[in-house]
Amino acid sequence: MESLFKRHDAYLSRVPMKYIRDFMKHVNWDSRLLVIRGPKGVGKSTLMQQYIKQHFSAGDRHVLYCSADTNYFSTHTLLDLAENFVMMGGKWLFIDEVHKYPGWSREIKEIYDLYHELHIVLSGSSLIQINDGQADLSRRLMPYDMPGLSLREFIHLDTGLDIKPISLDQLLDKPSEVCMDILSMKCHPLEHLERYRQFGYYPFYFEEKKEYYDKLENTVNYIIDVELTKYRSLDVGYTRQVKALLHVISQMTPYEVDISKLSKASGISRQSTLKYLTNLEEANLIRRVFTNLMTVTDLQKPDKIYLDNPNLLYTLSMEKPEIGTVRETFFANQLASAGHKVEYAGYKKGDFRIDGDIVIEVGGQDKGFSQISDQQKAFVAADDIESAYLSKIPLWAFGFLY
Image (cartoon, rainbow, N blue to C red):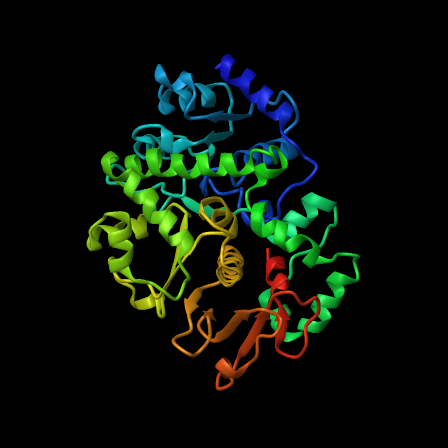
């Protein structure tokens, strides 16, 4: 145990406290058992360490942070850890990368049932399964899905400007006032938007700016080579084809979803292509958009396909991404990351339907309302404009929702 506490102290001594994401406030840390899920690189480990540093004094042995992929667990079990920790008076156990521990759910369930005074905070891959056949934790475990940085958060980290998030209702009800409030804080979002779309989603940009694309590509390869093969039973022999599938998606326009074309270009059968698209979305590498999420079946063809965020577009595309695709990818990512339901509005009815009844067309500064003129609650999200006018809202404003 002493070796774990030494590592715990070392981790906490290095964790940055200058900026703590608002996501911290959305987690019910009083839950006896919770897991923070998300793709590699969004800041799950940092968030856990920041919470400990905020709420426990240095040297407090009632709390322990450790990672499940350390050598300690080659000779010890999670049950051993919990038993020894509780015997020493431990109350809060933080286990990072828990998905890397074989059979973690079974042991966590047993720990939860044995030690009623112990709070357990886990972090894991987006692909982590709460009910994996070994132990159903769905009634015990509270999951939280952590996205990457919003445009608002990127601007804060880049400039120090502290602008509070806005709600979608606020933005749609009073777009001009909301935009003017943000601009009055000497913030010019258009100055930052393009840089954000290229390299602002993953927080590690601020640690390794020059190697950002290399690190992001390595992250994508890790997710496919390791996580999809281990947690979604992807045959190792098909990892190259899945990467090829991802590259094809990075170069296609969202309204050209042709599964046969995707299948042929990547060398994967049609049915396998649909399955891998599901897996890639679960891994937060792509986003499938359907006309009606309530009726989606397992192997249904999506109406649109995007990469999860524009940074992936700039990383994976062989050529400069088409600006229309960049805009729609940004919009869908920011709305979904803020917790909104994103669907396809339908042919000639607009690009997106949000939360069931809001239609939004995404385009450049000259984008008009003709395509959505017959829709009751419809707006245009326009790029390259600074202020809102009537129902035309700057695209950048949707990056301030979280």
